Length: 321
Ligand code: SF4
Image 1: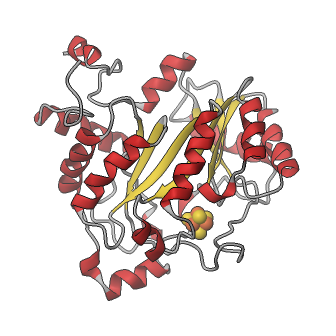
Image 2: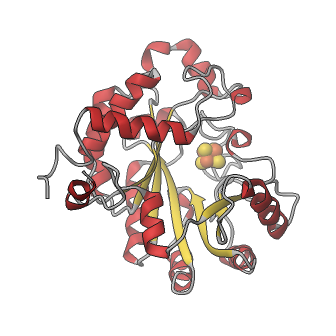
């Protein structure tokens, strides 16, 4: 079976392109990301683009306790390394993950100071920068391309949906074309580009989400992350859901596994899958319909479902190699 999977273009023994596997093969080791809060804000909160932010956003729900902007980046790195040491005993090198808010939303001079400070940590070999597609320009990307000649540099855009009607409803403050432009500008400079999408946003049917795979396939992305929509307490999304629950596709775990397999069948096979689901700590969300399930278990269930259905990434859009 392993040989079959390799022949199909999946060298990591999975039925999809695994981002973890890609990293191991490319860099020869496992690299753990350490989440940093570098004190950025977001133009969709401070009034430059909008106020109030995306309707689902509560940044506190998305970052770990060691990462707070009152600490220096090196202190956050050291505490993050300590935090992950139990689970990843053999990890020697790390990626500094600028995750909180919009991590290119500052003048270039400030960005250089922050990124280079993180890279000066003795165990850091690269940076991952999470940002909005409307927070990059040619100058910033030229600098990142230069940096990428000597370090691992990945830019990760929050795209969330391929549909402008959805982006408007969730108050993203940018459209899909802006995302396409940012991804293209980044990839043209040889920088690895990832993107994040949410499955289950209001107004999107399952068919719309499946159809979006063609749009995702057309973007020059190296990797993608998907999350099922989780409704964070106190957000405007919570209110939207209370008022119009019928506008939301909600997935039981078993259904989501099948749905994500349907997505995988439509995604081009060379697109690395970094994440297909995720759990926000229970204290932040209105419900935990999947119980408390760890990412490793979710990945195991996905592998099993792909096997049960004898299918693989890209099966519906290209021929078996
Ligand atoms: S762009 Fe990110 S940080 Fe800004 S409001 Fe939206 S989810 Fe929150």
